[in-house]
Length: 477
Image (cartoon, rainbow, N blue to C red; front, side, top):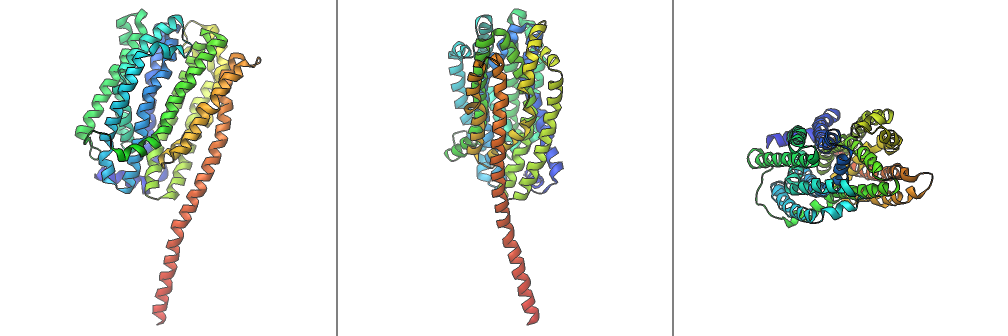
């Protein structure tokens, strides 16, 4: 309990920059390691098997986000509820978090696995997968769906650990799973043979997820000092706050699935399978570059949530400024090399196909044109999740993932001057509009915070004035 109190004290009164670094560095490193799961699957399959196998893994990826959607729905919602409860010192809520999480994860994971296994070919056909790409993708995705329970529990419970402020431990657990996956990828691909390379990569993934889930379960059963697994069951009083906050995070995952499915289908229709390969490699780079920003947002969430619960609104403002500057610097680290050397970046995934790489390089630049703003964008969404304003986060997510983006993906390629490139331009146009909305929502939110700050400060000033006047009267008497 003392460690938990120390963490809370750091969040509500520690130095802003040092607290940001303490929260962010483990989260960023942990999320980068997490991102290596799919990134390295694509790299190993692309280099050890062929471009068809790599494309099969990438067209499968959007549907693995069904599991990511479940884990973030419950994990982010539970983490936000926990951070606010720690700020308020609400022990009853703290004690019920994990039992509720496990029940919800169990129910939703079984649903995803059963539906996924039953309709794998039909799902993949939505992305435009055909022929050998479709056959390879079905083999890969069915194995991944079998591990739904493991990955969903491991990911959601890890988010609870981060909400508690245990970022280093959370990073360690994620690192174990990811590093094991990287080690097993080439081993399993070699064991099953080149012709079954995607199967080997899939088995490497679910074995790693199983190990991480077991370690995480052991921690909450035996090692966690504050968050314990109590009675496992759906807690009706927690379901609404968990789902209302977690839904926007889930939407980012599930809508990304819809987004990428339509993108793969559209590029296949307007450019053929080579453009699916280019898009797969480009989205792998984009997803990996996005991971550190998602990581810093995980450090941002407890800083904002705990100070919101403790009514430390001035610190919320300071944390927001510090984190957004840091996130923009991180974005620049990825943005600059990708914009300068797009062909070399694509070559990591596409072997012995220089013509495809040359064709795809200009479109990779277009896809990344607005990436430099992503740090601000993801932190804005996380800010509203952290303070329990899930509806605003949901609006921003819907604008970026569906309302603006999908119509542009469908319409822009039909413009003759753009052709298949319209799919890549759609992201740039969407991001510009969403950033304008982010500025509007954040400006409004901080105007309210400043008002609340003045209302909580002025009474103290008035009381101090009254006390001083009373003392003066007594001295005169």
